[in-house]
Length: 429
Ligand SMILES: Nc1nc2c(ncn2[C@@H]2O[C@H](COP(=O)(O)OP(=O)(O)OP(=O)(O)O)[C@@H](O)[C@H]2O)c(=O)[nH]1
Ligand SMILES: [Mg+2]
Image (cartoon, rainbow, N blue to C red; front, side, top):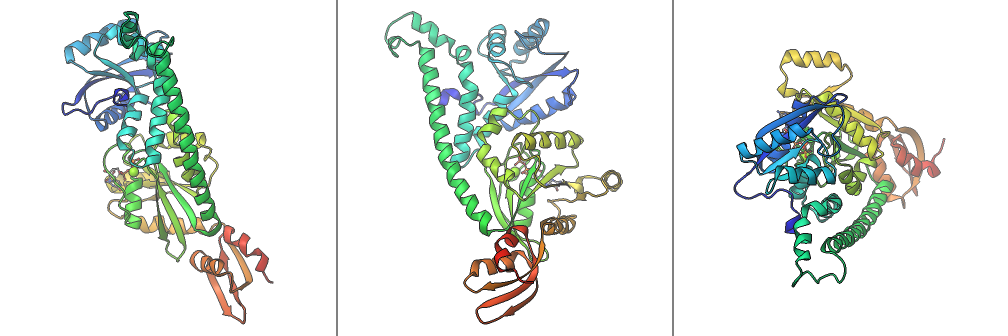
């Protein structure tokens, strides 16, 4: 599949020019959005040699940017010896191939989505993660085949060996069919993996702990937090989308309640819909959580935009209504005065630093309270044969009194809703 990679990661870094649009209705100022695009390009191993932007109400249908800008871009590509032009917004396949022709070979024209897909391809580690990325990449590629492989179609008209392959189908049709088949196969395989995951999740729901899922903008410090709390060894680095595959660790909150904490893929503004779709099964970890812990990097001046972007993705995956708690990381990077301002602005909020440990106690106290919020006070006589239930009550509930009798144990305590449901049949006055 080598010919499907969007950016090569050769020794010589690719030289990139970024192109953004200042939309009149846009939530992000173009320079801020391009700063982020530059970090993405850097993560993919490219070096940014130039930037260009234009103010527009809507995209120009044929070329996305105005024709004067296209000429300016062509000039810049030549002058700066650029290998690739990266648009900050999605290009239609037609716009992409128009621009490719206008700028001329061998300069590649890609968009933010292709860049993100490339980074995901570099960072996916598990089988499921890889399949999900491949699916998203092929779906992106399918409508763009004509532009990318037009030279193959040209060769075919010359006839000769190779041109007879496909028996009446053009090379383009063969390629499309192959890709569609591959997409169907990937979907089937992912469905299988998803089924397996659902069975596992179901087993967990019946017998396990309160589930906390970390969600947030990429680079907010989710993995650092999981590592700080549980000693997990998740890769955390100052790169975008360092984490793609979910990791779940058990953790005991102050007060003794067992919970699980899941770290998963980060979000970003303009997250490609195809990726969200392809990562459905990874993101089911978030959708199924008892509490979504939204981790925000308070030191980033765009943090309010990050919060909006995170909420948008959570809505898109159907997790917008789940119980959630927004917490602010990287408090160590604020000076005392700024921190005071933030505390005044968000009086209920938890500020902490996953890196220095500052404020982690406050975070944990808050998590304990959240996890206990749905607890019910119950008295029950549980037969000894219900060993698993008794164990879960001990690990996840707060026992007020306990008496071991002939064939059962008499327990009074506060238990999470899920355990309360299992305990109901043994409840006594
Ligand atoms: N100063 C400071 N840096 C932090 C803190 N938490 C995380 N970082 C740094 O921020 C960068 C990103 O941290 P990660 O834990 O990888 O972030 P993430 O949310 O898991 O990011 P993705 O997996 O890319 O979505 C790393 O360089 C961390 O060392 C913090 O509290 N203070
Ligand atoms: Mg991470």
